Image (cartoon, rainbow, N blue to C red; front, side, top):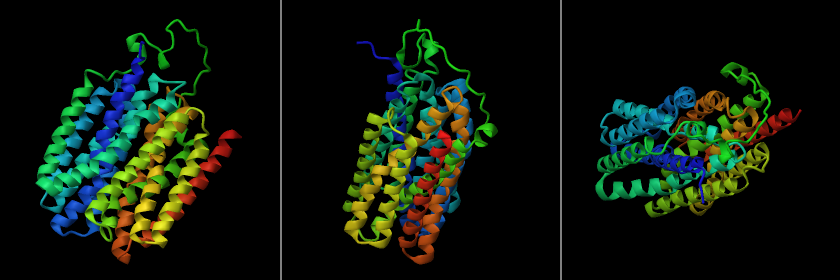
Length: 402
């Protein structure tokens, strides 16, 4: 049976998302705890370095989207893989604060090149009918990375130390990612004599002329503004929580329980993404987003109000069901509402704005913890923010329908 090459692209993007999330998004919380423990710096101070990681990656998402749209994914993924590897290796060797900031900066470049924006823009030309399924399936790699990355990093740190673990992780990432660039990644299906979704090349198709979206014209629409606002707030909360999850659990939970909880959180994210992949092409993506954000708010509120170890573990896992879908639903909405041709441009600016807001998450949680010597206030504020985000995306749904 012939397999449409786009699904090989999905498989490659799944690996890219796995490594990017294992050593980037989910790895950041492990690095935070290791750097603070090793050097004795405050959580808030090191969290600011992680904020730089997210700000740098956010500012690069516009050129990442445009670069993949015009030149294909190969150069972007290659630069992202090398930069992430250098940052991970460097963070394990850092002995001064300026080095920590420098290597998180480098990791930010890498994360941009391996991000949801990079994956979704890479796949945008390859699928039309099955766009939601393709994007959410590729995003399963992010959950697998979150499920396996932190436990492996924590195990490595315990067995061979933080510096050696980051060297092994960085080299592994560079080798795997660079091995995908030339042999597997391609730009457009038309370059291979194919059409999106593997449709017959002799298919006659008439389509309406799509608007020529620019950054500013897209941002002027209520449709995109509500996406940016809702997902910006939702991702700020999510990134803040995931960055501090290990440190928060360490206050009352054993190292083994921490590792198991982080893995279970990522497993829950994987299960949530599997459900999305199954139904992505049939759901109301905005209504689903609102429900996901309200579930996240309930989980965070329970953590803040009832900081018992068992409650923290259970609600962390419940929160995990929302993690993957908050990340994956934004490109699905933008792809549906703005089309494939404009996706690189529109989602590039949207994801830049979303991640700039998300970059505030680690510092928000860190500074509130330093102020109150407890994560309770940060968790309750985060729950309120998620309720606000759910309201915004629901309002946007009504505007889009009008």
